[in-house]
Image 1 (tube, rainbow, N blue to C red):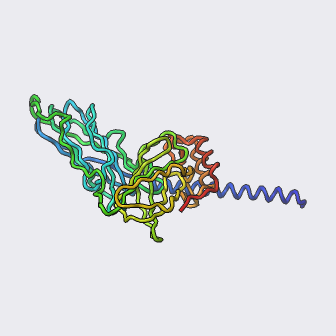
Image 2: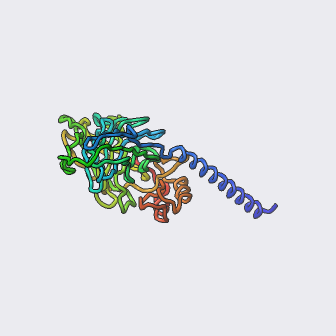
Image 3: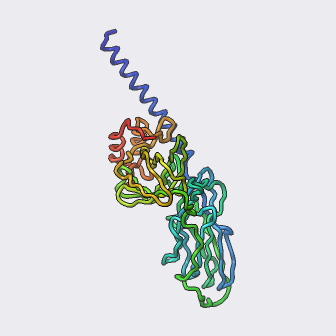
Length: 362
């Protein structure tokens, strides 16, 4: 057998083995993603009520998280404004951190959002299992044989870690029905815009001897901010590392702002880990008592960390990231959409290839 034939046969075998390995890895990652699918159901209790005309009706809002762990929830609750007058929407103690104060919008819609918040600068545990998250109250102003109260399309639930970051984990929502008995409606003295202000905890209680930090970071590739993103923030001091999940909101193209509370003043290293991006480290940050500010936008967190040997991001951009992006090409609502424009395109693959072999800072 000639040397040339040996080379050809060897090259062919390597190609076939690589192809087989790629198929195996793709199937493994598909199985992992199936296990991480949205599994949360959101519903009202009780599911049906009968009340007299002019009376107030109250529903508790619950989530059954299934296999998901939730750190924040957006509620959009819709009803027939010809049947009901709005009264209030309040979040339960399970979601103490107000992100968007509940408000009534024209057209029979309440909307608001809240998260699990923090205690002593550390993220509170996520919601899991069956949890009460809110209460909605309405006043019946017209008789009805059955009027629905339902969840709108903006209703969502989010986690704070893993491949599901940024993915709406609500798999199902169940409406409630109200039967209203009586004759002609009695004018109600309650004006829709004069509803009682719900009691909220807008932010954690500030401890005067502790430090708080507001910071800005830049995430590569994000031209149209997707809304709230959950960041993992690690604080490192004297060799000790504490991590927490925070909600960040967009400020400018590709930039996000977040805040952490109530930690001991001193000199820290901070590591910021954002979904679909490599982590970035910001060293020797001096934190004093009270409020502190940090502008970290000059360091760009590189886009492309979407997979790894186990099918989950591993803070390294490698062949697994490229393979997933190619597999997900032209799909919507995909973790491979690193620029968050709604679809996996050649631009997402370009970011991953350009950052190949880059590793996040820890």
